[in-house]
Each structure stands twice: as structure tokens, then as C-alpha cells.
Image 1 (tube, one colour):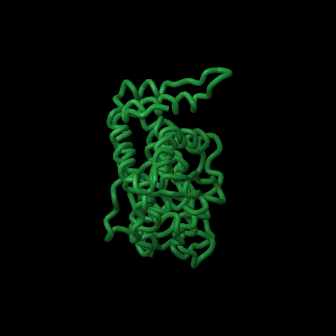
Image 2 (image 1 turned 120 degrees about the vertical axis):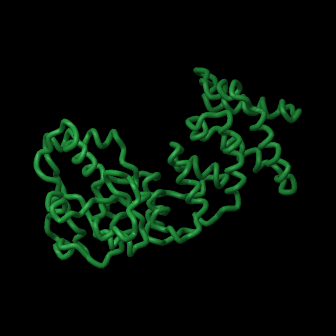
Image 3 (image 1 turned 90 degrees about the vertical axis):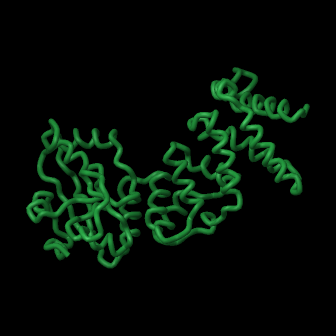
Length: 304
């Protein structure tokens, strides 16, 4: 442990850490630092200084919890033998990034950068990380999903991993689970927050449709943009076709759906994506569904 480890409840400055030759790290898998947020905080730090301290723990504590850390300034993984040379931010990544950016750029920070250890001892880092972000700035589904995956490195959670991948592409949580579960599986922020603390809900373990959904989505991505695929139109259409099939025909229906998507080239996909509602008669969703049904019925020789 470093010489500050016993200073629970006291404010520590970045200058003090630097004088002790301690570096700052972020947890690998924690929500990504976003340039827009950093730029906003840069201006605030110049005008107002830091309002509340960042929350940190010792590098060895993160190591003991099985968490990987990244050097906050280089972004490179920290070697296990070097964890003792770091403190790790649980809350305050954007503030820290903004403070350092001001130091290296044209900004003029008002005052020091302040940090402190969590006030309550004996609480798991996973719990601190989850609660800190509920109590301050509420995380969205993407943040909680990434946090849940990060905090369970030793568990096999293929559905959660696939959800995080889609959220990182800009898919809403509701649409991601439609693709991967063939329905809204009821996976919400509360379930993901509990998973951060090791309480894995059974909904995160149901993978009956996972590979089917990933295959359908993979084919769809060849023609459609992720922006369109992140909306409910196409997954709802595919789910309805699959659910309408008799049990003994579902395997054949899945093949048809894959063939259907393979037959949609970019020009057809572009026409569907640019669909607009007809004022007073037909909503955009219905226009899109009509186009999809027309292509599907044409492909398989079906008529209404």
C-alpha cells in the first residue's frame, strides 16, 4: 500500500500523488471517456474548479478484486507488478481527463485536482462503483451493461457480452435484446446494476436464441446501417415471422429469414431506411413493414 492508504476521509491532491510518484489509472471496461463530456468539464474546471473530489482506491485493491487497469494518460494496460504504483479512479474519469487536458493544452485549471478514498470501508469495489454512479450521474444501459461484464470476468456470460457489443454500436438496450433474445427479455438497468455486484439474474443466462439472433443480425448488417438496425422495425418483423411458424417449421423458417436478408441488397435496404409515413393515412412503421412484407412474399412466392 502507498503512504496515503490510511488517509480515509481526507482530501488528497493530484500534486501529492505525483510527488509520491504515484500514477492514476482507470478500470478496463469502465464507461469510456467521451470527448464531448471532457470538453464541457474543461471549461467548468477553468471557471469554477473542481466541485467534488474524485473517488479512488489503491491499485492493489483493484488487483485483489480481479480488475484490469489502464494508465489514465497512455491508455495502456498496467502490468500486474506495477499496480502498487497506481491509484485507480472509481468515479471522476471525465474530470481527471479534463484536468490533464487543460494542463497540457491552453486551459487554466482553477485550483487543484482533488481525490479521496471511499468513506465506507469493507464494501466491494463493484458495489462502490455501482452506487457511486447511481448516486451522482445516473448511468445509462450501456454503462451498466459494460460495468456488469467488467465486474464478472470469471463468469461465462455470452448474452451479456453480445449485448455490450451491440450497445457499443449505438443500439438501444431494448432493441439489442430483441435481436439476441427474440423478444424484450426484461433486461433493464436494475438487473445490470445487480449483475455488477455479482447477482446474475436468470434473464442474462437465457441463450436459446442468441446464436440465431447473431446470425440474422450479421447478415442484415451487410446491407442495412446499424442506425436502422438499432430501431425496432426489422427485429420485430423477423420475430413475428418466426413466431407465426409452427414448431416443426421453425427451423425451416429460420433458413428462410436468413435467405430473405441475404437477398436484400444495399439499394433495397436504402429504400426501406428512407421510408416516410404518409400523413393522415399510414405511419412510417407501417410503410416499412409493408415494404418488408412485399419483399418477403415476393422472395418466397407468397401472396396476401
